[in-house]
Image (cartoon, rainbow over all chains, first blue to last red):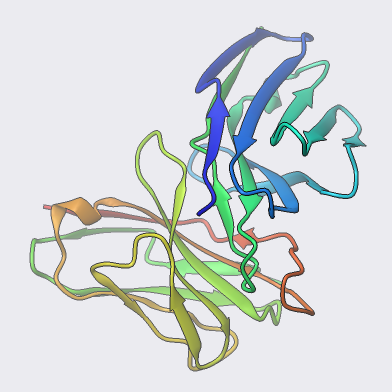
Length: 113
Length: 116
């Protein structure tokens, strides 16, 4: 079955700098790769997703890149702000008929003032 | 729209007790999911449903049961609570017009369960 590995587990960056979180997946049939942000005490919320027919997608300060050959994808946050502090999860589709996704173990991002 | 709602927010159970975690969505989504999140870990899928009357096991189904009698509701049942079931439980829903099409999963606020 699908396995998703996420690195690093914790990341601390200076406000205004960029942050990069990387994930690898095992199932070559995966074709959907969402990223979720989880703030303290809340449920995860989708911030961006990418499908296998594109290599990069941007939404303001957030971008995701996908390398299907190497089976890895990354989240890039530029000009980080205090409100970016949260736990971020990558995920990958499992190829099943029920829209199931497998989550990575999460990255706790802290923005230093 | 309230989105996905879960009750209760917190619960403490004694070993061997049973309880039902409630989940309701008002977005007319066909797919619903239950996850558990252990400290410092990602989310693991317990059970899922592709529509009313249809449920199936996820990665970690042991010790749990579900039912889906309506589109809106997807309760999770713990029959004999064990300390290993101490976790935060999230319900989620999504809409997929066709099998294999992936769309955003919307999550509820979670239920924090402690089994002592």
